[in-house]
Every structure is written in C-alpha cells, then in structure tokens.
Length: 125
Image 1 (spheres, rainbow, N blue to C red):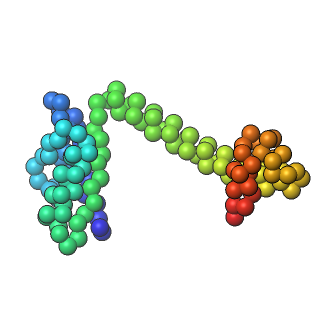
Image 2 (image 1 turned 60 degrees about the vertical axis):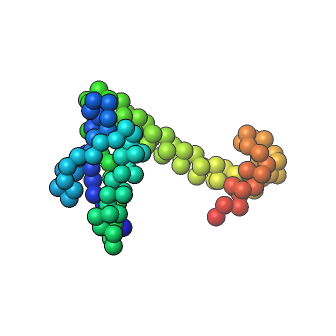
Image 3 (image 1 turned 30 degrees about the vertical axis):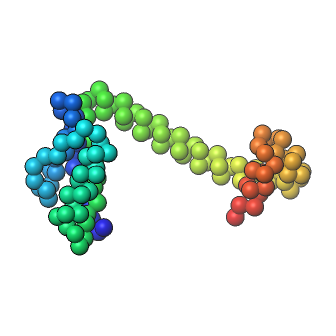
C-alpha cells in the first residue's frame, strides 16, 4: 500500500455518504455504518488497483455543533495520552529510585502497586 485515498464523509438522510474530493474515484458511496463504508471502499480499491491497492482515509465533515464536540474530545484524549505517557515514565523512575532504598514489596506499598508491577517497572530498560 503505497498511497492513501481520502474520502470526505457526511451523514445525510440517515446514511453515511462518501465523496472523493480529489477525483481519484468518481461518484458517491452510501452505507448504513462507517465500518461498512470503509469495507466497501477497501473492496473498491482492491478491485480498481489490484497490484498496488491504496489505503482508505476517512475525513468527517460534520455539522458545526457535532464537530466542536468531537474536536474537544480529540483534544482531551490527546492530553490524557500525554499525561498517561508521562505517568508511565515517572512510574519507572520512581520504582527504580525507591527500590534502591527499600524492598520491592515496600516500594509497592508506597506506590500503591503490586510488587509484581514494581518489579516490572524496575527491570524496564
């Protein structure tokens, strides 16, 4: 899969509708669910480009009020993922630091984790 074809997806009259703004595929696709839409587009690509089948990318053109809620969700999700990554990094640092002073069971008690988890964190590269 060397390239991806992007489709703009809207929800019209109770159905999901796809359009390819670049003209790489013509017409519109209609499906009752997004998973069906994605399967249909992937099958179309496999049929049209059997040797080098492009991937499918869906971009949603949602009503403004819904787009705002979805954007807020993605923003908060990104923040949460960044915080989770930082917390995981810090857990490794704390486990390694504390086990230099105390036993793994005592470190586990201080950190509120199982001793198995403390051991996993301690041996993390």
